[in-house]
Length: 476
Length: 159
Image (cartoon, rainbow over all chains, first blue to last red):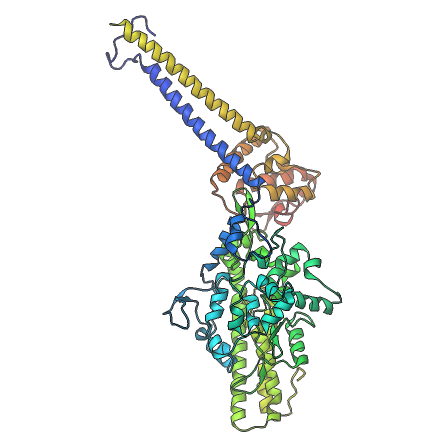
């Protein structure tokens, strides 16, 4: 302060006597701003600490009859959010699904479907001639659509479908236990034997939380009797008697087995359509075919050739078992449901989907390369397998048309037997890769081998029609 | 006439000073509390557990506990330079980046090491293992330098 301060506002250019006041105001405002920022940071740190501490809040009580996923979602909102996102329809290079508009009809009210695989490759119609799949077969959509897509597929209209289909297209744990008076396997057998439409009335939801989780502890568990019995038979073939998957499997095994409950090859046994996983000899394509041969199973008689043939159904679990990821102890969930950070907490991503749509979390956790590099590695494998698949498909349709011509030419049943048996074998091998949802990625070497053998069997079948003395390299 | 505004000016000046001082004190107080609550002092030290304070490094910390270097080196031994000036410069830079990333959530998952931090780690491999690597380090191929952690990536922590 000067001894004789000038009056306020006078002598511009000299420091006003309000300058210290202004400085104080600036200091106060700045300090308030800093305090605000620090308080905001403090609250953020507090929230993160809380997130790290409490993994979940029990909002509603869940028990062994709670089917509705929305109720589980009240206790586990993050997981439920991911589960709901399985409605997303996204294409990958060789799979996935993209939304195609369609005009709803009284029989099929869907206004969106995925693309038709039959239109994309008409050779599939030849391979499946005489079977319902030749009428309607589309790209698989997310878990959210499993029940709806099964109800409205045209396959329902060209053949009477059994209740067995529901084991993997609906949440069946509670309905099975109800139907079986508490006995899961008994309920399973009862629903298998019903007509699809009758069994459909007993189920309500597509796959739900309760199908893989125990309500009290959230521990993974197996609820599909087909898998419980199938894995027991498989383990018995490996010399492990009395295998109980819910008692004997490790947590890491369960992170694959819960998916293997449904993503497997199966067949319907006997007149009451009991669902059976054909793992009595093992999980490879030869072992499965050997089992079918041993029980004389034909899924249908081929309309063009008269051969007794088989349809392979999405053997993802079996194929993965032959691959390097399985050998390295990597579970289905590691790539298809990778861990995702929500604040300071970590959960499994319940939006089950192709790892190609989630490369950073699915692959980069182990593989330290850029997303572009990893995606192109995966797609290079798939492109190779796809070319092999096309070569095998050409070989198979070649055999089918030769067999058809030979049949028209009036050649006897005995004369066609070798070629028909080779068609059965070639077709099952080819379909084992074709129906498998990874275009070979789950086990690239195995997929390549199977396709090469499929082409070989088909071409041998063509030779057998031309040369009666020809002896094929496989047992008839 | 002059006495009143002068007196008022002095009074408002005093009030403002008190307000400013109070605001500064509040900032210092909340700042200090936040520092303690967030275990700020731990970041100046050498304890590996401090690096997992904010949860992001829990996998790395857990893997290090099981790793082969567990008995020989803590986080700082590999991830900060040996000289004190470089050590605190790297700590300060990473501390700021990590705080910003975790507060805002703007970061790549899984986390990836930066070029600077990779070179710090590489340097520390060579620092401790100088006797051995002195004979193998050097140019490999055309201008390429060999990297220790490309092959020995799991010695500290696999993830």
